[in-house]
Image 1 (cartoon, rainbow, N blue to C red):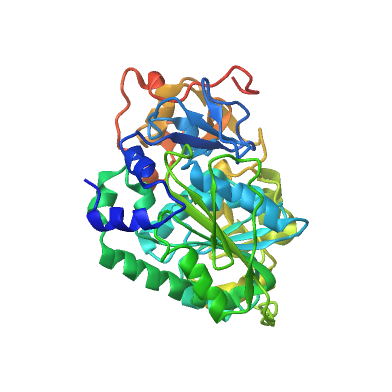
Image 2 (cartoon, rainbow, N blue to C red):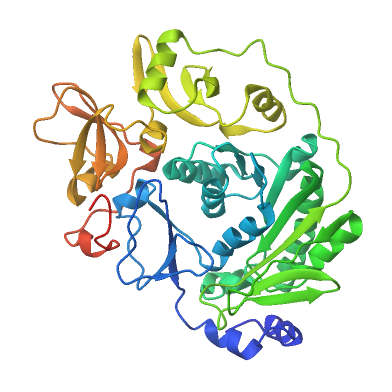
Length: 465
């Protein structure tokens, strides 16, 4: 059922075993998750580690992520195994760099963005971008669930980043592609065509040229796709290096069997081919910018900046561990932004910011309404609010945003927790308990009697279980 034009080209790629690769598409896709160690400290039962990502595991079978409260609380993220090699690449190219400014240009749905937020240090900044509005909303949701404070989410075309010359130390361009690496999914086969692959290659070139000015001198570009097409992979990097003053960067893969190093006219790329590795198809390559880039001036402190009041600052610091200098008031929201305000104003003039940081609470008259972002943040202070520890049935009820019932609980704001992981807020107003799970996130899949059999089983070494 594979396209004839695809098979013909595949046989011309001497570094690919076309027969083995084609046969592998009949095998089921491996199921992999990456654990958020800031929230969860147990490994899945019967799992095997992904060799190039320390907190990732292959599962024996696919659970129902939708029904699992730990997924919604950001304890883990389902992510394809080959793409997790980003961790090894990032570790090798970032070296001793500190306070990194990183851009994930094509960030939705959020796998690589949440991964990068865990890899950069607490003083680093990740700008996670997605040009399509609906996908940017999904990206912001997954960033919120993961709970790291060092991320700003934007919805901008790659051309907008040219207005931030030299701003970033590392840029990840996980470019939209023809999707050949996902051919275990029949829909990916149906959508493939020679013409679409050509369009993807040209679009990728435009993306690379558009974002290139935003990378500082000696900065690192990480380029990846989920296709095998050399026109979208190594040939695009060769094309970029002919246009710009840059050099390819080799990655040491000696500790990892099955990864194929591609050497094309001096370009180093790395291919992941089903049948040789336990994952989907993937390509990644790294380039270092050598041309001089003068970083643009950052914005001066905006005199219109609204500072929180003393009472608002006190509450923010009682409820969270964010530093005072990160706190700003935007409209009626008290937010911790992940960069200094001068740089924030610079970015806000060039980019459409859809998630400026972590919203701690909203001001409504004399009341402070704690944010769902606060509930899921790793900087939320423990035991500030009364807590309600729930089982799978009540957790499912909460995530469907149904009328919430509980036994004797205190008045006021209550943090709902499942196995020690925050899920969000409810409020006991006396006559009822209001469910504050975000309306747009509520799950629609109904819980079933054997829900517990459909979610991940964990080893008994958890600090929570």
